[in-house]
Image 1 (cartoon, rainbow, N blue to C red):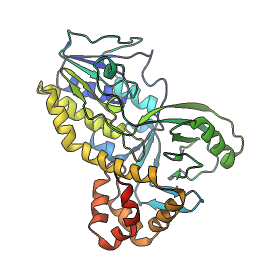
Image 2: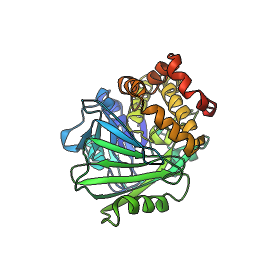
Image 3: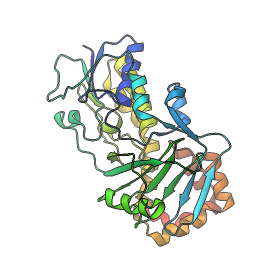
Image 4: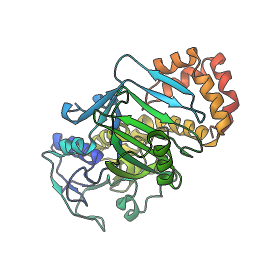
Length: 351
């Protein structure tokens, strides 16, 4: 066997498809009995994913064109474009589609590395067994997310809603993501996310019927080392997640593409090098934004919302903003002295 992939989630299956197309022998090992279970993810993915794969219509639950951001006091800043910007995917179904035709061994928990495989890939999530067995440094920054699904009776399908504030979701934010039939309502925090979510739901929806509850760990900083000998980590296992939003589907798939190219050349070190050049800068920009959001007070956050609501700022965000690639937007702000001056009081929180 050329490549052993641990984890049949989105990233593991996407990597396997790349290897299959290149004629490289592989096998995926999955600890659960089927692909896509248990559910962990909201399924909100930017349309950047179209660069990597054609998304089947049957896995798309909704398309959104923008976001409504709410400050701690409830001030709303709306950011949107005319065209749809993101998909809300049925993640279990999406993963099942990706897994079709792949060699997957289910109900298999890996306890040691296979010395017969040329390369071993840990695509087994933030609690990566492969990372532990291969002695990779631990993830430095992780939070816990929890989400429920309730019926969607009247919510605007074209917008996601994000709620910020220490009393709402300290260390992150709460979200409401609509589909045709349901609302995905969740949040992430450093501790006690279920308590904060219960309060958030009660304040906004009363006592709705909870159709589903799920959650998991969200890495907010990548592992600096993603290759150790013949072992590589990818996706959440490598911490390849945006610190701004906690999303990792597009970033993980783009990273898996880089990894597949390195495997084709029998050179995992190329994966580390190319990933640091192509992906890490965007994640670093997202982490800088997260550092600011983590360190400012709610009073300061209210002032930032006042800045964001100014037309010149909103125009720049709408023109240059990207869910996965914040660098262009940050560069535009830095190169505009008039706008940069507005954010000067908060730049001390960047590092």
